[in-house]
Length: 427
Image 1 (tube, helix red, strand yellow):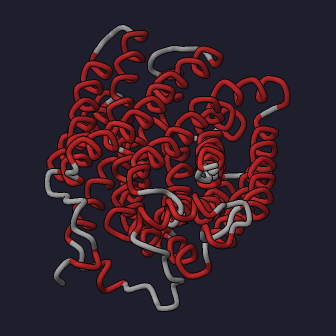
Image 2: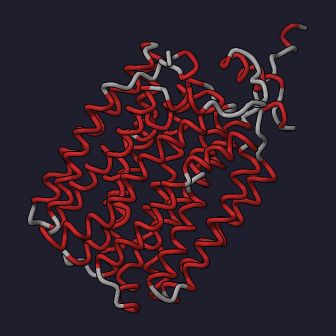
Image 3: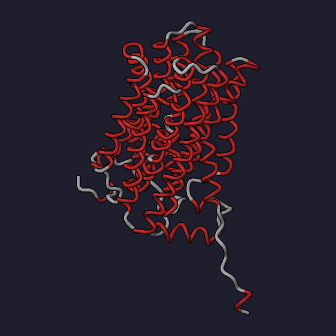
């Protein structure tokens, strides 16, 4: 009779939520990379200079940087279900609105408002996983979500080129915006702010989640403790490191297609193909970084070294790839070295985004927002500064700056201790 009584197998609702979050990350990067692949068409139609395009690209990133904290607060205060659905509808509407731009000012304002909407995406998505993912799954979860974003970015250039050739550049913004609105409807229907609220979670999965977190998590009823969050040395080292990362990844997301087209002399179709390769390599880096960090944690139990070892290795590998990519005279070699660089850069991402979960708890969204604000200040400075550097010194200098920032980020990560939670740090 005992053989007939088997333990209930846990459901996997948390994994369905993780994959739905991966789709959101894909859409965020698809929507922001559309314009990078459209730059040659925009310059031809509007007569924009390189510096003008740099400021349009920066407008998105300034909106994205400045609204990180409000975005993180929305997720912590109102819950990820409502907050994430709302902001995805917002930014998708402005993705569509980009198609109706008529000059520099209109496009810059629309891209700023688009960035303000996307600002809350990663902090709120991080908060959405904080009550669902087991601690031993967090590195993988953050790695695969960011791999989804880079896969979306890698898929976008050839798709955009195909749509532009067939229907013009405006159609790309309309189609990608509609995709985001569809996702928001599915998220609001399926996601719940805690496992206890989800009808499809069985008792075994609920027990698995609770056991890994020391019991059920109480609902947040008090204000976000900003003084404690902003007094965390770990968070500020993390944020300075992410500033360096944000600057470097922006070089590849915003300008790499133009670099291939104008400096490496690839035609439009070649640009679409070769611009996607470093981002595909970055997708692999996101996956491997998160998996490697979680494996290290399970083997050693040392959270600090599991996060630190992966990130430092990734930044040093990125610097080692950027230098030959910039200096080689062979355009194909440049692309392959760039793949190494972006792979190394993206090894660090799952680890970086696991850290707000490690140190932030229920306020992971707000902690992630501080980190991502600094990262995107770096990303906002990067596009316009790159245009000025190219005009004054040529294309090699921006990449040499990026290599130096990768080394600086590796040094900063040596100061980051993932085991020191904000709630227990002295302030």
